[in-house]
Each structure stands twice: as C-alpha cells, then as structure tokens.
Length: 146
Image (cartoon, rainbow, N blue to C red; front, side, top):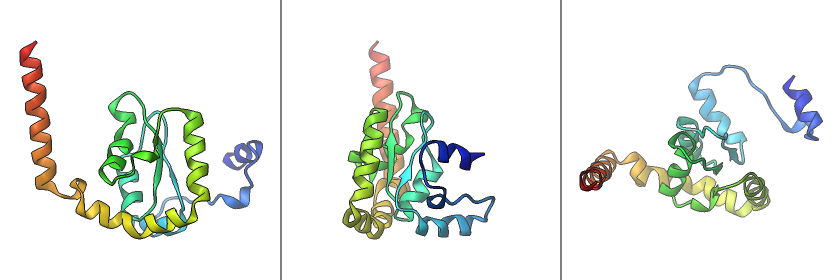
C-alpha cells in the first residue's frame, strides 16, 4: 500500500527500503544507511531525532507552534544546526533538497554530530538541569509579576 502511494508521488520504489520490527541495536545500525532524517509534522520526533543526530544523520524539521511540534527544532539548536529548522512546507522541501545536494556537508555532519551531541547540553545532565532550573525560575518571576 505504501509502495503504491510512493509510486503515485513519482518516487522510485527502489529508492525506499521498508522494514518491520528490528532490535534497538539493528535500528541504530540502520542509520548508517540514511543520509537525511525528515522529521514528521505536526508532531516532531523526540527520541528518534536524538538518535538520528547521535548516529550522524542530520534531520530537517518544520517546526510547529506547540511543544510537540518543536522538539527536533530544540535538539537542532543545541547542536548548532538551526538552519535545518524551517517554518513552512515549501521551505521544508527546499531545505531537504539543499541538504541532499550537499554531499560534503552531509559527510562532515556524519563525522561531527556525535561529538556535538556528546559535548552539548543534551548529554550534560548537570548543565541541562541548571538551564531548566533557570528557565523555571524566570517563568515563575514573570508569572508572579502579573
């Protein structure tokens, strides 16, 4: 059924590989076969996006207005890839095509992303807790003023 939808959209079926359930280790290994992650909309990826970034796969996201549509945008900002966050369907397609055409950038990101994740706030529990505490305190002060 999905193959038929792809064919209707003009996508060569041989370019898409569909898999059933696999173990987590097999799932992570599968990222070696992926060039670009295309985030879902309006509900963005959570763990899936983090794992893609950890495995060196850049993710293009169309950020929504609510938290459930902005998770991947937040992750991307924490690894310095704010330029992969877009605000419309047209920009989403444009950014994905741009990234698909930039082999050198994808190769570089494949090598760098794990380090960016490891050394950034997403994997630094103390830093994340400190930043979260500051944000909650700031929100409380702003609410208390009202």
